[in-house]
Length: 73
Image (cartoon, rainbow, N blue to C red; front, side):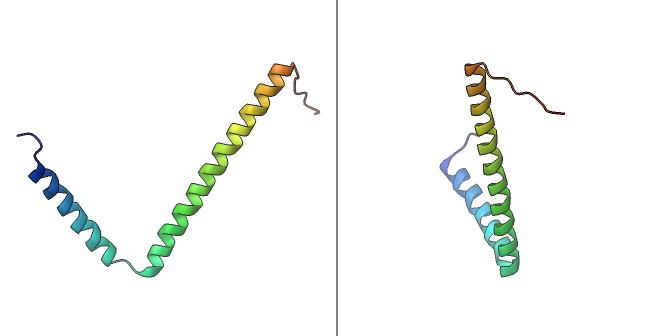
């Protein structure tokens, strides 16, 4: 009852054919929308990650040197 090579290849074949059928129904405008949206989300996540990394680095450096941040309100 376990996974055999035949079951794995059948599963991959069915899902690949379903994916290709879905891609065949899409217009080029939809491809551009999906790719553009994915790139925008990826860019936002990378920017967030680097800003968080920079903030952590700067706070670590400030703590190591004994500096504190004072708010001018």
